[in-house]
Image (spheres, rainbow, N blue to C red):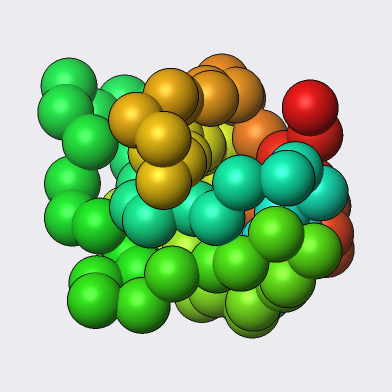
Length: 110
């Protein structure tokens, strides 16, 4: 009888530990602009989202050759995000499926 009580408790403990491990990832990424044009807008939306969320840079820009550290954690528990940069000249660059739980730096290149 003790085994029956203990087994569900173990299952719950494993589930809670797994959830805690997933949320413990550091989702900060250094975004690098290795292009000749300033980035005016930067978006990161988890791959399960249907839209681009908010512009992370706000009123700031990321100049050519510049870098900034961004916390990509939106509280969803996702590790994979789609990135979108809108440049000063109106052009855009996107990258789908960036694993922010594993990547510490991400560069936009020409």
